[in-house]
Amino acid sequence: MAEVSLTIDGLEFTANEDMTVLEAALENGIYIPHLCHHRDLAPAGMCRLCMVEVDGRRMVISCKTQVKDGIVVRTESERINRIRKIAVELLIVNHQGDCLSCNKSTTCELQRIASYLGIKEEELDRMRRSDKIRPIDTSNPFFDYDPNKCVLCGICVRTCAELQGVSAIDLAFRGFETSISTFGAKPWVESNCESCGECIVRCPVGALMPKDQLSPSFEVRSVCSYCGCGCGMYLGVRSGRIVSVRGEIDNPSNRGSLCVKGRFGHEFVNHPQRLTEPLIKKNGEFVETSWEEALELVTEKFSQYKGEQFASIASAKCTNEENYVLQKFTRVVMGTNNIDHCARL
Image (cartoon, rainbow, N blue to C red):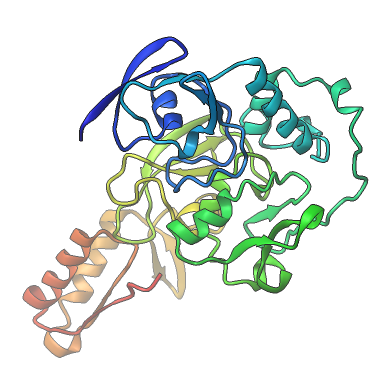
């Protein structure tokens, strides 16, 4: 890929010719405020916060402006900051502002931009605030949608369409009534949403949040146990319990994406009825035993069957290699082709 040279805020950089000005700036550690940009999605230019001056005269949105050799970019000026402050003030004035009770606090992009631009509460008093409180959609079993915190950046809509190919949601209605909505404005649980949670991961504010989420004390790198795809993930742990899950971006199997089971289906780990030791039946009742005794019992029982008397079923929660070993055992050792697989997520 060919590289071009450009100047940003008086500093010279090189960038790939297919990059935008915003991408080049962020890659080189220069922050440009933005809400609707995400590296996984095509540029949309909806929030208008990434305005910059190019060659000292024209103003453009940096997320949709390709880099060119020799261009000079200025990311901040009195005119640029005035435009940004007006845009952000219009978002904040009708935005639910109780940041202390919001789980997105300290990681909220709107909060970061407001601090960066130095927006003060008294500056919002001159604006007319709405007293309309929109109902929160809590119908989905895994996450809630709060339209009072939504900034209409469209990232969730584009994620659902571009990355998942589902298009369960879209921008609906007009003017002040504009909101993210399912088809026919039905509850999320009644839409064709697959609850993958990819929109939640990319939401820059607290509009889309998992139910009852807690901040983890630390994270453990792991692999999803629901199928043989090998999706990488980080499990957030707190007080010995899994409280959060995020995909591993550098994992070649999933590149940060997860399905509904991989992201939300880990309550079984700490379930009080989960089996943690093998059980065998003695005197008509199941009792805990050691793995050695359990395997000896299985070996003894298996030796009583041969050929068509035997059948096995493999689990989708095993790896591909483990399932290969099972089918080999069934065919070579037990002498039968009676094997099936529950590879249905």
